[in-house]
Structure formats: C-alpha cells, structure tokens
Length: 489
Ligand code: MG
Image (cartoon, rainbow, N blue to C red; front, side, top):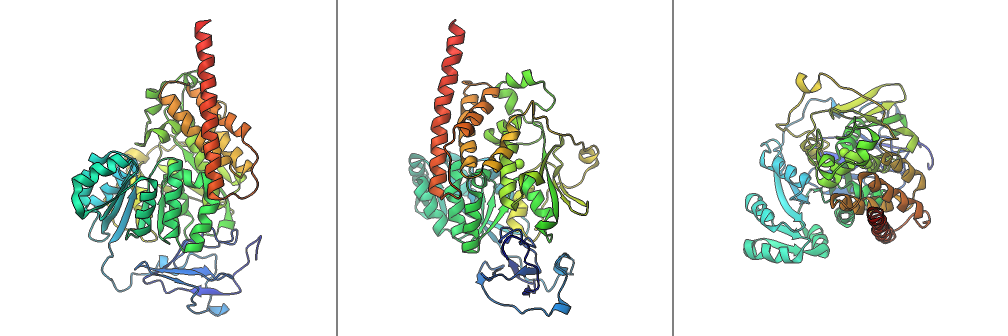
C-alpha cells in the first residue's frame, strides 16, 4: 500500500535463519519498510522478496511458508534469531573483498582488517582499485595476492602491470575499473574512493547484486534515490561505512522506520569547535587539517573543520533511511565516542558507541548481519568517562545549514553542493581562497543552480556535477581577482 505502512496481514514470511539472510530492505516502498535487514521476518509485497544465502546465491520471489496469524510474531518485536542459541556450526566462509580506493584512508584500514582477520571471520582480497600510487599498490598486491587490480591513471597501470607480471590482471581508467567490478569474484565491495568519481563504481557494484560497503558518501549525496532503485532491481544491499550512518544502521536493526522520532547525528565539531568566527574565517590549511579525533583523508578533514562534511552526512542520512529534514538533528559531541543515536517515538534512545576507529564500521559492513570476531578496542573508562553534547553553532559553521537546504531543494542540489565543495576544498588547500570563502563558493553554486525537474538519471546528475565544477572554478577566479585588486590598491 503506497503512502503508508501496509501492515503485516497480507503475508509474512518466516525465514529459518540458519544460513539465510534477507537482502537490505531499508528502501522498500518506505515508509512501509518495517524491518531493516531483520534476520527473521520480511514483508512480501507485490514484487516478491529477495533472499540471499550465505554462499552469496540469491533466491528471488520464492515462498518459504506463510505463517498463520495466530503463530505470527509481532512485527514490533525483534525477531527471535537475534537472541537464539547458535545452531550447528558450519565452518566460517571466507569473505572476498573488493577494495576500492585501496591506498586511501578507508582502503588501508580495510587491508589492516584483512591482515588481522581471525579464523572465525576470514577475509580475502579479490581485487584492488586505486588512483595512481602504483608502488603502494604493488606492495598491497604482493601481500594480499588479488586476482585483479585497477589503476585510474593509465601510466600507473602500465607500470604496475610491468612490475606484477602476467599473474595479476591490471585494468586502467574508469572503464577498466567498471570492467573489473563487472568481472571480479567478490562478496563485498568496500568503497572508499573519494568524491563524485565514486558514483559509477557504486552503481556497478549494485548491478552485480553484491554488498556495497559505502564509505563514498558522495554517491548517496548525488544519487541516493537512484542507487536504492538499482539495489532493489538487482537484489543488492547497501551498508553504510560512514561511522555515523553505520551507527544508525546498527541501532535500527529489527526496528521499524515509522517508529523513529528523530535521529541524532553526532559531529565532533572538528578543530575549530571552540574557536571564534574570526579565527575560523582566517584559518590556514594546516590548522584545518589537524583533526582532534579522526584520522581521515584531506577532503573529509577539511569538511570536518567547516562542518560541510556533516552537511553531506545529513543528506546521506536522508537518503539512506528516507528521513525528512525535520527528523534529523545534528549534535556536537567532541569525544567522537557516540557515533550517533536513534530516538524512537516512545522516547527510547539507542546509541552505538566505540572509540573513533573507522575499522569498526568497515568490519561491521563486511560481516553484517553477523558480528565477526575482531581485535578492535571496546569500552574503556579513560575514553568513555566524559561524554558531552552541545548544539551546533550555525553562525560559526554556516555550511551545516546547506545540508538541510539540499534536502528541501531536492533534484540535483546534492550533486551541485558536492561538486562545488570538491573544487573549493582544492582551492583552499592551494591557499587561493580562505576558509570562509570555501563555504561561500558552495552557497553561490546552489543559488545559481539551474532548476531541475523531479527525478534525474545518473547522466543528468553527473552533468549537474560538471556544471557546478565549472561554476565553482569561475567563481573562485572571480574571488582571486578581487583579492588581487584589493592588494594592489
Ligand atoms: Mg562520518
């Protein structure tokens, strides 16, 4: 039933959970997505359902038995398998990973998890993709022995192919990367490519019907709606790797989306949390890159200093869980221990906590809905003793408001904000513009954005991305020319 929760009376399917897990249904014709990837129950709708065996084989549209109403578990209850004693043990299956962006922050931390994987939760690298650092990739190939590797830079691909010989298939350019994704033998792709360049690879993973562990938040910001349509069509799942969204995803396990009052998205506040407006406006790249808690790539780190990263995460949250802007509340939490919270309509607040370490959400995305064993740190008095929360200051951090504006504007607004910010961050790191101007560039791009009609195709969204890049470059030229004139007069 469109436009509301259709109830559970038509049919509910009992899934004997041993060895079977449903594909992610978060974007089912929501708000009637009653249970997120629950292990026990999922709704039948007109389009049938998807089940995925742990072997990776997907069964669609089957029927595993309708439970008579009197025996049916309440849809409000967390399904029993979450609490059940383990059944007969089968040997753990090795998860085969595709690591997209293998030399970046997410990629290297993923490979660290492979290196330290336990026998209970074994991991194997099926393929690697990187931009141009072929020497680093060569070391990764020697250590992890993937069958396939892709380099965005053709010259780097040629160097790498020479160094690795015939045993490893090396792909080159964007077309090569998409071909590798289409042919590689993998279960989960951990996608840590930075920026809009990650969008087509996201779509390619979903077209394979595989699990997309998504750290490339830009994919969601630009084309969230489209990616969920793809996932639905191909029986694929999207599991967020962004720490806040992974927290929300974990808090929502077995819960109904229409029972959520609001989500509290935590923000560390970055290096300028306690600085004055003037200090922030004139901050240097070095100051902006010094994040107090997280070890991340430069674009995300600069975004944490302006809270633009949080603005993108607000949009990401909106798409991942179909939350309207009024159900999203950003809260500054300087210690980065509470990764986000879900408040339900009964006033209960669920939170996911852990030390700031991206390996946690990556590990969860790889093994979900199971919890594979890991040697990662848990609770400690030292880190957890003082957790503080405060409202964000939109006067000092105006970028945050742009996230909510994009949700209201819809269409290509996400693509435009993201592209303009990518260009502005580059210009800031090159010291061509100030931190204050960085946010002004994105605001100006949103103001000048040509109106877009309703839903857009991937090509239309990428063309909006191209328009915004061009606009931002010209706008920055204008700002630089103005600054030169001021200096000489
Ligand atoms: Mg984050």
